[in-house]
Image 1 (tube, rainbow, N blue to C red):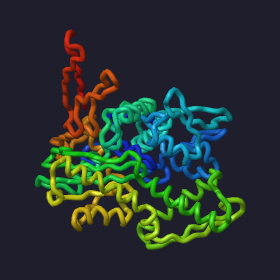
Image 2 (tube, helix red, strand yellow):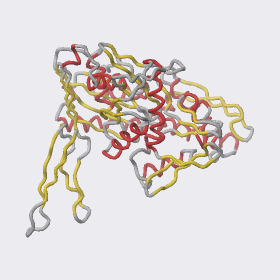
Image 3 (cartoon, one colour):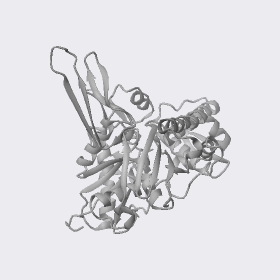
Image 4 (cartoon, rainbow, N blue to C red):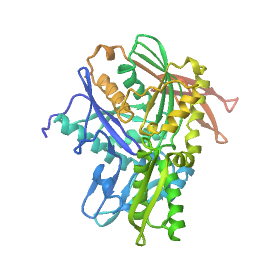
Length: 449
């Protein structure tokens, strides 16, 4: 590759399970395929005695090297070791997480040594891979990017993601919310219209869930409200299926495979495959030779049973939808388009729950749920780097909101909000606080972008 540096910027969707990269130059957005020809790359990093593998190669050998193959790191980034969700995840992961000054660190065997990496460092490896995918296509070095995060990520998680970009050698021009990026893809693509309309983005990915309600008028995209769960997605559906099959295996063989990381990885891979098959068919068979202790495993699963196992998790996606409508003070009938984003929205039961909530309203499936977020990120990257030249992007204005209140810690560990949840950004907010009447008051100034 030439040493020439690309003067534009790329858009990266850094996902829990899969990542995607796109570029916008002139008037076209291109989703860039990796060396396998896939437009999405597994967010997996594997360490061996000889090398480090990222993406497809890492995921493909996860069963042979489960203790040193890292995934789901997006569920760690920006969190503390004592976070209850981190504690729960640690129980299910085959790789080791250690506490280092309150921060969770990934411990692996690499080049015949014990190595420790922060979630930011692991994420940077995935970002580096996506950067290299783009560089191979462009034939130039890439130094700038727009990276997406779940709308419900807090400030720590956003900053940690930006740090991961810096470690990967990227100047992260902006961190933007995934559903907002998807709304750009929809608004500039199949959903293009001169009419003002309210669009609900339902974004259910591999590990996170977001709902955002936007008002789109011409090129102005205004986020009215956002809600979600940073720990809900396809991985959880796989886990529920995994637990079901673990019990089935024990019932049939009287053997417990819970302590065998290799067997669990093989079973999880089969669960993910079965889940995908059940989005199109009504039943499938899981077959694994010599799964554990010489025992083969063979079991059938129907779509109805899969839905039953995940009923609670599926239903949990509807509460944030209701919350968004309440926060935006908008009735169901005022929502014009329901847009599905994220691979998990292919699940028929998910689609039915959302449609039923909106009294049978038709769902908008015209955008690719795996690529829409990277598409929107690339548009924003093209605008910020001056590469976008289309008439549509010339007038594009993005007005997002703060998903969680920002404030300061007061005496007695009391949280004093300065920027309330749902505030449109950019914004500057001031708050005067006078804990000591005889002294001059303190001014807290928070600038949010």
